[in-house]
Length: 231
Image 1 (cartoon, rainbow, N blue to C red):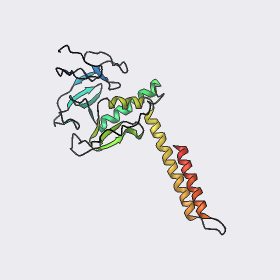
Image 2 (tube, rainbow, N blue to C red):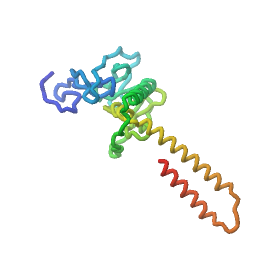
Image 3 (cartoon, rainbow, N blue to C red):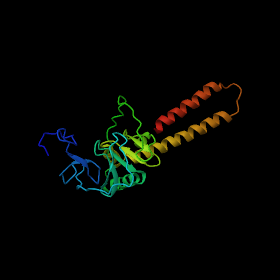
Image 4 (cartoon, rainbow, N blue to C red):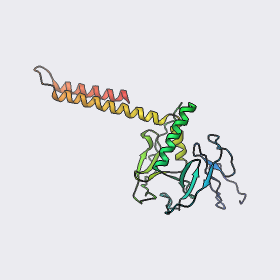
């Protein structure tokens, strides 16, 4: 628009405010510069169109701009034109997750998980309101092990800050949900065995000459070791 230089990370011109990039990849939901035909992240073809305005106005939880209705591939989303955040309802997110797992299974993409960079604890915590009901949403580590913190309204949907939906898709494609399920099953099995050991400890009749303080410590230590092993 104005010919000014912009960084490769910019989504909007700092001088004239023109939009430079949008979420337009139907495969990984990555940001694509306006005019690009193929996604720079995964190579998928550009597929995005503006949808009819929703019946009810919905505001961005982060910057309070009015959300735009867009269709990326077959997914109907709400996008913030200012901060590039994405709002999905529960049904759309379930479909995205299912489609990505199917694609990973067919293409054999479940190889290495992205490195666990951890959560930035220095970043101020903000609880954001749901765009639909206005209630404060819960902050959730997606799948417990993704290290992507998203805001969730159980009744209405999930809010993703800029580029977080693409990171979630990458997490799913590399087997993240399968790993999360396996860890959850291991934790449940550890809890079951620990409960069984505790029941044995409580119901066992005391016998003369035995130090049950040491015995209880041994059961607890064994249970803790089992939990660590399964995790």
